[in-house]
Structure formats: structure tokens, C-alpha cells
Image (tube, helix red, strand yellow):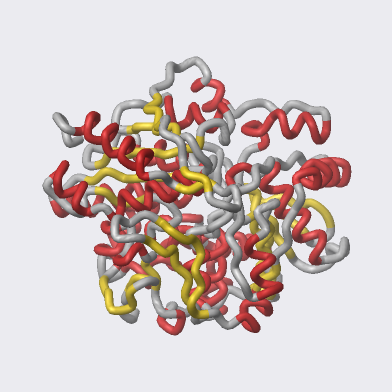
Length: 488
């Protein structure tokens, strides 16, 4: 296995290993950790086809070991993966919809979200590194829906870790909110006046504010990340396209993967899987009414607009973090312009355009209108009796549009959440109210603990929200109050 070097998308001179990149969370100059496309490890077709004999943890080892072998020995990595991916706790279901089109349910884990897969790996790996080094960390997470719950569940009760979760007030469901606010202990839920992009801006600014971490914790690296900006969240998402292929492969024939896309971690993981050798003809990246990416593929220009609210709430993202990795992968560069304090003054500045020809060959993207979410849910239900939720609906509509209604090519839609988390949307679409998952039912009876960030965001000329200095200062005051007498 060769050595993989990780660098900052905003500073190619920074070079480090996986452990340090994982622990840092955010790379230098507010970049994301990435690796050269030509350094991506390859798996031959025999190795990929042999995965049909392995369970999920076994496939995860084959996929991740080439990235991690220098930092986690084989025995420890297998223990981490066997614990994270116990199929009794986090099963994967694959279901035929029509013709050669399947749905993969990545939503059967502890918080009923596909993000359980990455969060469980991240939590166990973080605890492994921290115990080894005798250190502690606070994990900063911004969430537009499911990320927060998955990370909170994965980190809850760990001795070396605390978790601050930033979520937009009024923009996630009550069920999603309770997954953040009822755990308590080492989990701290911050309700933010603003949208997801404001929450994400807070997270990035905190992670880059080493002076604050040094002053409060005597350690400039005390704050780390579990968002899609974390390498520890990205790499586990390379695994499930291999698992999917192992269960429905047709003698090495290629597959189409349709991915409802928000912050682009899921999609970027699939791009890497394809580069490793997985035979994927096209990666479909459906978005909701936040259409910046399909517009970019058409025009070659990235224009960040105000975030639009949509039934697929976890995808209400107008400036996806992992877009920076995707652009880097195809030879370009995009960044958020900042002032000396770290405050973003302009989002999505693209100073090097990526290889658009290659991107357009590999990727396909459309924007699914809000009303079409409900039509897609109804279509799938009437065709197959399967109930999907709004994010899966985007995956279905994108695939059905790409195939022009002819489902005669092997294709899989990623279904990323349980319908019971979106009962009002399901009722609106098909008149049925799906049951809440058992774990969510239990949380409705628990008291919540919420830390409120009440200061208002600034408003750009185009109407989009942007993190205000007063907001950021309020966040720092709350963190200081929580941890000043007890660092953990």
C-alpha cells in the first residue's frame, strides 16, 4: 500500500497524514483536507467482485485500509469497523422498485439516517486517537437535519469528547431537533437564528479560531469537526457504493448511482469510489431548489444564492462544503473570501475553473422543485407500494429523468432517511402517516436542553443570510460559560 499525503484545498504546501488531518478537522487557510486524484488507491475487479462474500465491516476494511494503514494498524482498524458496523445495529436494506432500479436504505441505524455510517466510524476513530495520545477534544458540528443526530448519538457518552451541534432555528423537524437536544451529558445543542449556511459559517470560523481555543483550553487544536468538512466523515462514505455493488452486481457490469445531494459528502464519497475502480457509468447528483450545482455544470460559473427551504430539509444548502473537494479533484479551486478576523466576505469564489468536460461526463445533476418532491413520493408509492421520503424523492426524480422513464439499466437510488421522520410530508403526498421509528418515539417523552444563539445574522444585498460578528461573539460566550470551569 502506498503512502497518501493530505493537503489543504487552500494551501497545497500543507502536507500531513490521515491522523493529523482527522484530528485537525479543518485544514490551513480554512481549506478542506484532500488528496491528489492520482494518489487514490485502486481495487481491481476481482477484489471488488469478491466483496459479495464479505459483510459491511469486511468491505469497509478493504476500502478504507489503503487510506488508513499508516495511522491505524490492521487489527485495531478491524475492531473499529466491526464495532461501528455491527449489522444488528446498522443494517443495510436493498429493495427493487421497478425494472433494474433499486433503492438502498441507508437509514436503518440508531438515528435512522445514512449519516450514522460516517458518524459511527468517526466517533470510534476519534476516541481511539485521543486515548492513544492522552488528549480530549470538542467536536463542532453544523447540521441541516440528520448530521447532528447521527454525530450526537455516535459521540454521546464518550469520555474523551464533547460535542457542540449548531442547528438552524425552525428549519429542522421536531423529531430531528429532539435527537440533538434530549441526549444532554457531553452533547450541547445550539439553536441558531439563521439558516444552515450561517451554522456552517460558525463551525468553520470556530475551527479556524485557534486563539479562542488556546485562550479557553490552552490548546489551539482543542476544537475539531465532524461535519462533511472532516476527512473522518468523508472517507466512510466511500464504502457503501462498494457494498451496494457487491449485493446486486451483474458480473462486473457498470451501475448508475443516484444520490440526493446537499453538502456533497455522499456524492464526493461516490466520486472517490469510482476513482478506486468501482464500475459506475454516471453519478447522478439531484438537488432541491438550491440549484447552484446543476447551474454550474451548465454554465461553468458558480453563483451562490440565498438558501431556499425545501421538503428535503437536510439538502437546504446553497454553498456545499464538499464542492471545494470536488472542484479540487477535477483540477480547480474555490474558496470563501475572508477578512483578517476570519469573517466570510464573499462565498464561493472560483479562481481556477475545474475540468468541466470531465465533470459533465462523470456527473449529472438536476434541481427538483418543491412540489415535485410530493409527486415523486406518490409516483413511487403507486408504482411499487414503497414509501420514500423527500430526500429519496429527489434521488428518484433525478434517476427517472435521466433514464427518461425507462428503468432498464442497473441503477440504485440512495435513500438517506426514514419516512417516519417526515410524516407530514408523507401524509401530504399519499395521505398516509408512517410510524415514527421506535427511538424517535422514546425521545418525544424526554426533556430538551437548548442553548440559544439569539443574535441576528447579517443580510446580503441578494437577501441571503451571513454570519454576523455579534452572533459569533455570542457563540463564544456560550461556549466559555459551559466549559470555563470544566473543560469537558
